[in-house]
Length: 220
Image (cartoon, helix red, strand yellow):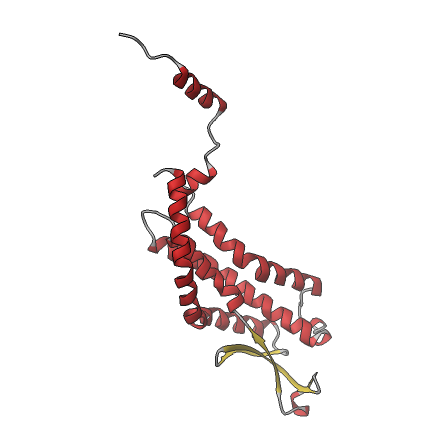
């Protein structure tokens, strides 16, 4: 397939697939997040046992419950409050990377689709987990302040490191990772060969092509 034709076909298929992929993602976002929410719940409760009570689904929301109560907007011991302090987490701002990757993957002409797609999903899941951890750390840092950052006997990342970790895993990786993964998996397809390798001919090859095209035809 000619490179320009492959590119036009990819853009057409991507345009057609992007809406169904994101529509399916809106339906499957919570089931998609369940394994990650369970693992992050275990990580946070082990890492911060005196701070984190549970990370759980509450209806359509994901809630990070702490071991504190709330009184006039201030964290207090549970005995001093009727309410348990918790923060809403939105894994959907991370999991859209699966829909984005699916659209890129299935819009690309290739010999095999399912196995490479499952492999790609398994690559994206650990990044999704790191993103949810980043969301939780940021909420704990912003809302609890010194209660979280100055825990005795617990290794808590510096506030600047948490902020950098959040920006990287929430604002950058969900968009960049699917594109990088797609390029890696499809490097040898006609589409990417045409896009990235168009200028890879050596000067000697180019000169040889020019001489051959300019040489007069042999006469009988």
